[in-house]
Each structure stands twice: as structure tokens, then as C-alpha cells.
Image 1 (tube, rainbow, N blue to C red):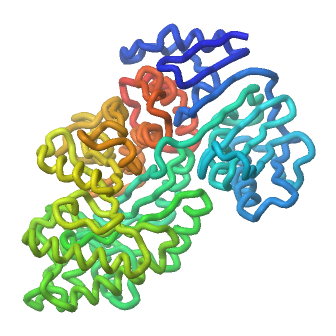
Image 2 (cartoon, rainbow, N blue to C red; image 1 turned 180 degrees about the vertical axis):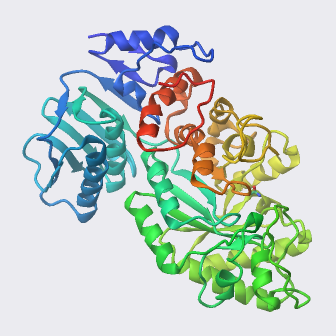
Image 3 (tube, protein in one colour; image 1 turned 30 degrees about the vertical axis):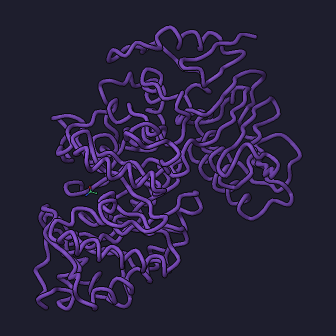
Length: 529
Ligand code: ACM
């Protein structure tokens, strides 16, 4: 048996794939555009995000017309659902019948919940392939779901084929692996967001943050303040018709995401970014006069009226209804770019808004500007600064982290998917600079902010703002492939983060992205298959 320690030593690949492994090693540090075209990564090396450990060896399993997906005879409903969903995901590309059976006896794909497998934690899994089948083991249904997504990548893009023998043992580096979409600047149908949920879950992203409200539109029905959606939702950037989601549609989306182990974090942005609300209700304005709806792209011009009690009735009603729609623990209350709210008012407002979140049983998430006010106990801060962010702002965030506030990292010059790749990118913005695929990937979340220990980092989030992203193909072009790199930063161990190796893993995803009809940017620094 041959043992090769991969670059940086996390991925240990043993056994019968020696030729492919040494081929990878031979060009592993060659980062020239187009270099490495001859390299064919072995299946366990292609996995993206890179697993904590993988070992190839032994006979493989013939995935074909006889394959059955087996859950245990006493498997809980969630495990059977994971099995059914996996079958559904595999039937399309494979064209196989893939029945789901409630036994464990016999060959096939076996799903096993094992409470004793403590090392796998809340989301980890083990995948073991032998001639008799592929066994997925986890402590939780979420872990089994992630195992299934790994299995998808070990199967041919189309049709039947052999899953090579081997074993993966995998757990995430960070608990929070998020993607944000701004559905306020442009309205998008729930179906498009569901499509994104499938794409996120495939790469083990477990949180969908929805930026539901902004100056240009209010996208979620609120029963106690109906004009927010019916009037404030009927606009978007550029003057299009806008739109909003009913509560039934939103619940359906949340349930769809939950089945894929994606938690939805709704954001109601306050006290700025509120023109759609101010336009809908004159009483929310300090002068009692409603402004026009807004379809431009300026920021920082609107504010809730901090001195008015009616404002807090509004906040309580809205956050109460949103909390009732949210099975997860987090409510995001924005707090960014409140340039029209004096600092003392901002702090006073955020004190009360945070208390409302707590009253409704949820934990606050806010953009990192809250660090300059008084973040409530347990509040999570989302950092969206960049290389030119003043050191004082970063220090305030670091101080908040040291005071116990977990951080979600979305550095705009790495993780903002709306930043153009380069000057030729048509959609998107460039205020944080161009963000090529390599740059988006090449940072370490655990040591990114000075004086912030990795233990303060809850996770990483890729953010897609939509000021000038209006269609599915623009959305996907900006998200893909950078989303995959950010997924890997959130999941894979630090020692696996390595651009020369990553670009080959990414290149190997191209046929899968194409088979799924995903529009993606063919970045020149990646030797696409
Ligand atoms: C932000 O980009 N204003 C959070």
C-alpha cells in the first residue's frame, strides 16, 4: 500500500489510486493559468469542500440499476426523508430507479444513525465504500444529509458507474456556513431562492440569510402592517414592478430549506435602509409625511423615527411576526449604513430593537456597525469590512469579539458575490474592488481579523447584493464559482486550504455545474474540465 501525504498534510490518500495521486502532486504548486490541464484528480481528491480526511482503497461499489437506498428498519422520519431526498437527487442524473427501503440488509447505499459516533458531532459523517455498497454514518440526520452530498460527488455526473473503494471522515470547521441574498433591491420568485438552497446545500452551506427589506422594497407580508408589502413591495431598483412573498410562500421556502438542513435567517434592516416602510406608512416618519417610493441605488438616506413610540410598536409587530415564521434561533436586524441616524439615536434604537428580538425568543444578528453601539449579550456581529476599512472599526469589532460576541465573516473584498470579478464582468459593483476567484478563496477565516481568535468566529457568509442583479443568470454568474470557495472556507480544515489544490477541485466541478444548468464564470485562473 502506498501512502502519500498531500500538500499541507490534511488529506491522506492511501491505496489503489497511486497514479492519480502522484499526478496531482507533480503539478500541485503550479498556479499558472491553464496549468495542470492533464491532471485528473482521483474521485476522493475532487471532493469540494475538501473533507477533513479521505482515504481511497479497496474494491469499489457498482452503482447501477439494482441499487437500493436503505434506511434502518426503525429509522426516524428525518432519516427516511434524507434517504428519499437523496434518491430524488440521484435519480435525475443517473436515470436509475433507486427505490428507498426501510431495511439495512443487502447491498446498496445505507444510511445509519449512530449516536455513539461522538467524533462526528452535530453535522459530521463517515462514508465508507466497499464492493457491497456505500455506508453513510452520522450522529444526526444533518450529518447523513451532508454525507449524501459527498456521495453525489463520487458518482458519475450522468448514468451508472463505480464508486471507488475508500472512506471519508468529515466534520465542519465552522458551525455557521452562510449565504445571503438581497431580495429587496430586486424581487425574486421563491422558486429561484429554492434553486439556490439546493445549490448551497450541495456544498454543505447550512444557512440562508434573506435580506428582506430595504429602501427599494419590502418583500414579506406583515399582517399587522399590510401596506409594507402591498405598497412598499411594489417597487424595485430601476423601476420594475417588484413584488413580495406571502407568509405561506415564505413558510414553504423555510420548510424546503429545512429539509436540506439549511436554516433561514431573516433580516429586517433597521434603523436605516427603511424607505419602503416610510413610504408605506406616514406615521412612521418624524414629520408624519410619507416619502415617495425609491428605485435608485443610493444608501444611507432613510431612518426610522427614533423618538416616536409608534416606531417601537412597528418594530415589535414586525419582529414578532417574523419570529413566528422562523424556526431557527437568529433574527438579523441590519444596523448597517445608518448614516441618517445620529450616533446616540442609533445606539438608543438598537438597544430597544435588540430587546424586542430577545422578547420574541431569538438571538440578534446585526452588521458589525452594532459594535460601535451596545451589542446585547449574545448578539452576533457580521463583519463586512475590507482591506481599506479603518483600523479603528476593525478594533471595535475585535473588542466586541473579545467581549464574547461571535462573528460571522463576510469581508466585502472576498465574500461579497456582487463584486465584479474583473473589469469585463457585466453585472455587479466594484466599490470594494474586483474580487477574482483566487482572491475570494485565499484568506483564512480563523486568523483574518487582527486580535480575533478563531474561537470567536462563528463562520463565513457569502453575500449577494442585487442593486444591479435582476435575473437568475446574473445571480448565478456572480455566485458561481466564488460560492464554492467560500463554502470550502467554512467547512474544510485550515490545513486543506490551498489555492493550487483548490483550483483543481474547482475545475473538476465544472461538468456538475453544467449538468445542473448553472451559469458560472469561467475564471481564467482555473483549469476548467
Ligand atoms: C452592507 O453591505 N451594507 C452590509
